[in-house]
Length: 163
Image (cartoon, rainbow, N blue to C red):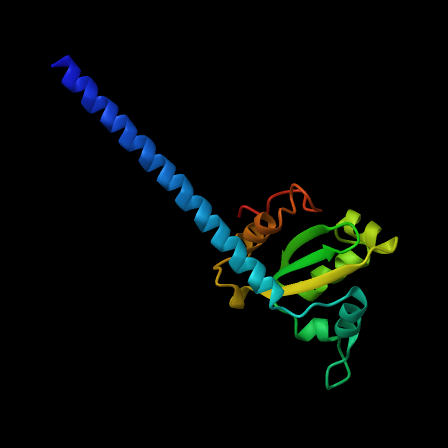
């Protein structure tokens, strides 16, 4: 009787082990698919250099009274690629143009500004929350930080907002 119980217990342990491995593999596949989807979403956006960004931001509207950034900004995330050092910064904002502007004028991430000021080449990508498929800015930002590994190997100082 004890041998039969021992055999069943071993079989149950093997089953649990195989099930655990399957769940881990499933999670890894899901993470890879999510990262691929987000990279595709970012890659499909228009790429701006800081100079092009400032030209867009400072353009006047048709009534010639306000900047484009004051009236046409989006809610979403932005990805700043330092092409020189292969570093990334991911941020979010309800007014993305204003947030991106802060990084290149000295009132955002100090490391991004210092590298820009000293001549590193940057590329900017803007992603609208509406087109992302995510319900909240925080979720989208965290997913992007994870996708680009910008906490461990970039400018981000945290893994994203938790609100």
